[in-house]
Length: 170
Image 1: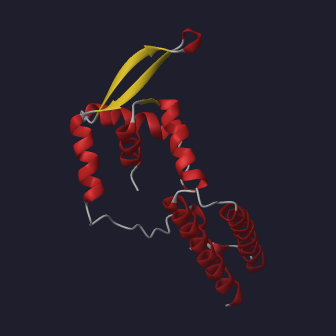
Image 2: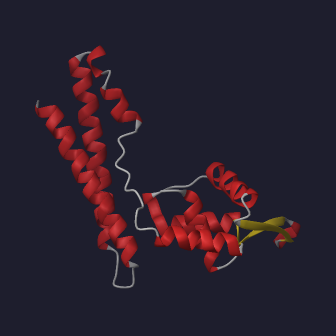
């Protein structure tokens, strides 16, 4: 998923400064998709270069200037075209450091390799427990998309645990 569309979606509601965008994004996505300022500000800069957003410097509290970002008409159209696109890709990615390391586990002692797998399985079980408890705290007022995203993550964690258990059993 592209951060630019999340930013455009938030700005399509109302203008925000960078900190607000990060806060609203993290509130919306929770732990499902963390974003850093190192990702946010270059994306905002690129959106401004592409005339999809504008930036206006305003006086903030405590005499600190802030950059307020607003979506342009072109940006709103671009966002809505993306939103209406029925051919969005679902990314099934295994591009993570742990998965990469599996290609090379045969280079270490088998007992150490098994310990690594068991540690990862335990870590996934802990995450699953945490997110299950978080999911159970959702109420009828929790946005449906947020419930669906959390459920997707729980299913992903289930699959990861099953896969590592299969590695351990083989």
